[in-house]
Length: 194
Image (cartoon, rainbow, N blue to C red; front, side):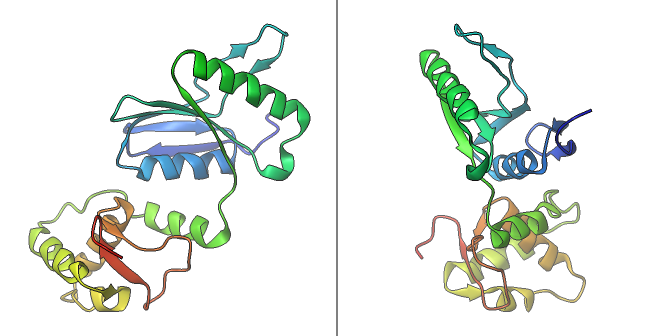
């Protein structure tokens, strides 16, 4: 009887399944799951009842490794009516009172959404020995390297290619996720200059 299309998503951060109420919440959870600074994610974390009688259940909450707690609502800008914005203001105020942050998530544009969907396929670290492949990928990405150049590092078994996608998921390698990933996309080592 849900008004949304519920989603059950595996969460790499927690090792559990998150029960989410919409595809947009799934997009948000996927973004948080990829963030190496996020150490815990929970869906529908609390029922908030406000002084004026309004009630609200935020979509997602996460804890960061520095102790920050962020409470999220996922709602496209065009669907943020006055009733929702009122509850969002009350939620933000309540979060501030307990030292938490509150944030709104809007839908990602197509390139980012599709890139994240693709990279999510490579969440699991490869189970085969891959130290040598990792060193080759990191060395190549210290200077300017394209996806095509990294693909050429593979010996034909697909291991280096799978590892490259996994390292892009974990943000150890970085590519512009807001643009379509192509053979010419530049990949760099996290923390390296642009």
